[in-house]
Length: 59
Image (cartoon, rainbow, N blue to C red; front, side, top):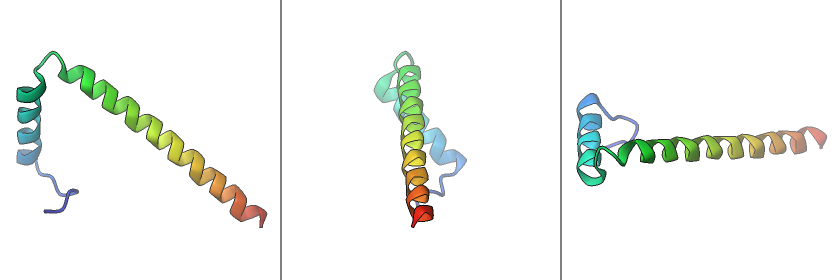
């Protein structure tokens, strides 16, 4: 199974198990933390790529 090919049924199953494990009260906090982490990761990788482009252009 390739990770990029998740269908609607698989997503519902993941959400169902997340609700069972973490509960409905904790799930929004986890989603917010995951979103913040992803945003910071994208910002860091964008900075690294920009630094790499600057080095490449200066050579």
